[in-house]
Amino acid sequence: MQQIALQWGVNCLIAGVDEVGRGPLAGPVVAAAVILDDLQPIKGLGDSKKLTARKRELLFEEIRAKALCFAVAQASVQEIDALNILQATLLAMRRAVEGLRLSPKLVLVDGNRLPVLPVRAEAIVKGDALVAAISAASILAKVTRDRWCVEFDLQYPQYGFAQHKGYGTALHLAALQAHGACPLHRTSFRPVNETLRGAKP
Image (cartoon, rainbow, N blue to C red; front, side, top):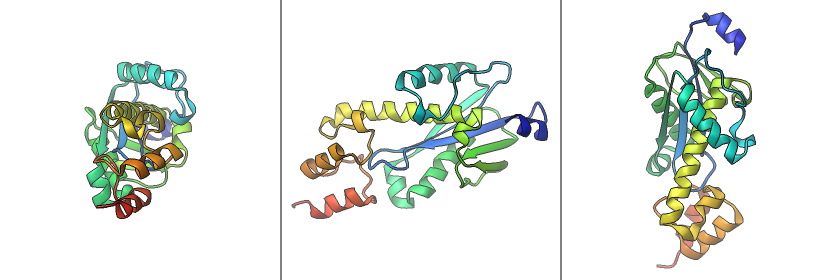
């Protein structure tokens, strides 16, 4: 991050972008974009998947309080099924960047694919463990999507969304077999599609 700042200038606004939810069988894919404030450093940032849920929740609030700006966006289940998961992910990322209150001069994206953006962007593999702004984005996206799963678990308790967060666990696959798919499921994903094709009329 320091080398990038030196290359682009100390006052260069750099946005980190990451997403959560490419693999699950249900729910939206969520992306976040964050521009951190160098004058208000945040300790403990890292790959959101390696942090405890409690730590993510605490960092979620701290990021929202201290970042220069942030935005969280998503691509819906319908968009995932219509576009495919990769294009829907890039769409969510683009929406997150476009939602920033400040316009970044450089966008750093976790992974190896970039959304179409009107500003300079670079992809960084394992960026959520290497770049603070990407780490912050991963935490915002993860907590947002996890909260979505808890909310919709109340509406569809038979699937256990709060436990598996939509991923294809044995519990989730058994629930699909027992109850069929609900409107939150991605019908273009094979386990869901197979359940629908095998469902009795």
